[in-house]
Length: 249
Ligand code: 4AZ
Image (cartoon, rainbow, N blue to C red; front, side, top):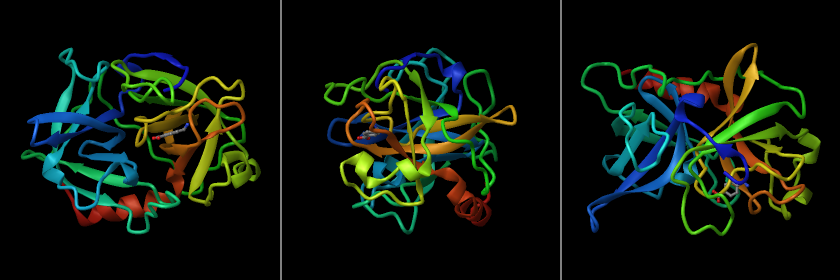
């Protein structure tokens, strides 16, 4: 997160860490953010995964304020299976969404606690007013060219841009599709950055924190008048329900 401020996982208990195991070093490395949407289900971005990446190499950590350090409230899972959206386009990042199913022997995966809780999904027809203030969070870089990801979770505030402004002109000419939405800080302060991908953009809707976007891409981080681009989650409710139904816990 560019700008923003240090946070605590209890402020966004749906934030997940996705790590990938590297056999050569026998270590897990941080890959991306994710979002807990149900006990055994985590959403993330399609571009976070390499082609034919094995689910066995993935690790999902919930409930951590510090990326590499447990304070006792964390819950760590292997991944049983994951799905990249069938129409993900690695050129344009259209349909940049992935769904991970956590592994369990007992029918439940994540246990709700102050540190771990799912976020609400939007209805497919949810449209929030332009400039609605929403929250982003993650362990991504604090600046575009920072060497490292953040050790502690940060949170930032961004506003939803009107669709008519979320166009290539605002994003160095890159294609913007109806499956994307733009959000940014009109002050040019808070923004998502490298490593925040796959993490949440949540907005309050009828008193519930609702997952409106998944961090996807942008032209740099925190540049004035350049929004971050997010996967428009309301377009994927049918896709998510379909995967969950065909693969019950
Ligand atoms: C990235 O590289 C990235 N400013 C994610 C979000 C944004 C920029 C870059 C938005 O993962």
